[in-house]
Length: 92
Image 1 (cartoon, helix red, strand yellow):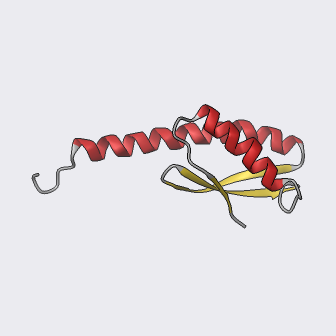
Image 2: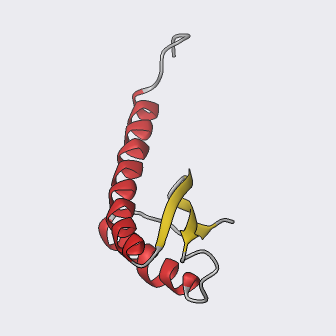
């Protein structure tokens, strides 16, 4: 490969990741509205491949049901709407 050129595969991988992150962000925005209506919120912290790190805020931070909300609500919605979604990871 010539110096300074990028393979088509690398370009496709970057575009695929960008599309993936965009879809995930769209779903998070939909979920955010629901969480905000209950006094909480969610922020995207980072993408790690197909996994997503998030931070719960407001009433959601420290809520005893936060783990359930993340796994059964947020992660389930992401897996349903975003092909290939991995795991959701809560960070403080």
